[in-house]
Image (cartoon, rainbow, N blue to C red; front, top):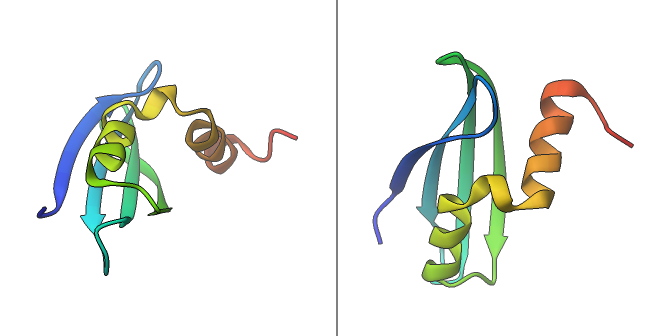
Length: 83
C-alpha cells in the first residue's frame, strides 16, 4: 500500500488530516494526524500502529473519532492532560 490520506471531522470546528504510512513490515504503520481548527493547522501528533494489518490500520484511520485512546491523546495535546 502507498501512503493513504483522508480528512475527517472530529467535533465542532476541529478536523483531522490523516496520513497512514506503511513501515518496515506489513504490520507496522505510522498514523500521522494534523489537527485543524476552522481549517487552520493547530497541532500534529503521530501514532505507531504495531501489529495491525492493513485493514485494521485503515479502519482505525477511517473511524478515528471512535477510538477513545487516540481521541484522549488529541484532547491532551490540545487542552492539557485530562487526568
